[in-house]
Length: 260
Image (cartoon, rainbow, N blue to C red; front, side, top):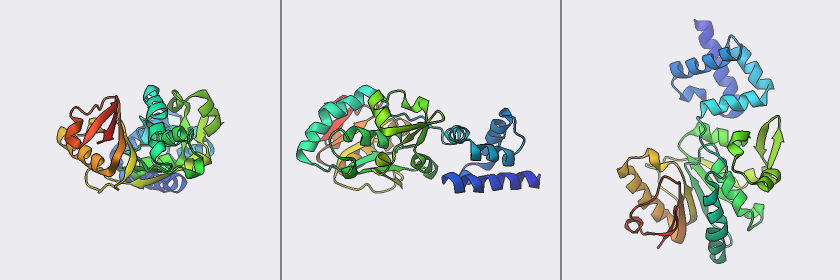
């Protein structure tokens, strides 16, 4: 039994060294069962053999990481909303500020902040774009920094963007270095940590649905306070704010709110 435990502990160390993801942060019994069934399905009989597979096969590694970090995010998710950001919100914003302060809150595995940079790159040089991305889970941040995704995450990406900003290798898509450099990732708990002030754009999508009504109210106040006057909050398509005025916000478009 001890041998199996050592096998698992060694596996955890190797994965952390290779990817920055720390499996020991998850409940051991649950995680071990999940991974054992994963490697058995692939015809392996222990963690050592499974790691050897992950070491030489990038596609298997990314599939494994997607399993671990329950990846539900996508690039350009709900494409029409990103179009509104590009055609209506950003041109107005950039008239007043050539270097907007941008935050992707609860950024999950990185698709959203990278999308923000890709959209902004239509208006300004990549070396001038700065997007701050935060999440509570250091494992999803490590996953985001790898910036390598399965094709299903790119379903809504326009063809020319896919060509310009992704490199395909063995059925996987890696975000190019120029876009990666525009995003900095940080750990943050939205409810308990303070927010930086003075943002022009805060994007927080498909996250607030997981909070209680009370927590949502607290967050809307915090987001509003973190925006500069005229700054924009962009929320997900299930997260309409019903009384925006209560938070000093006004509707600009569906799911876009301006600080009054």
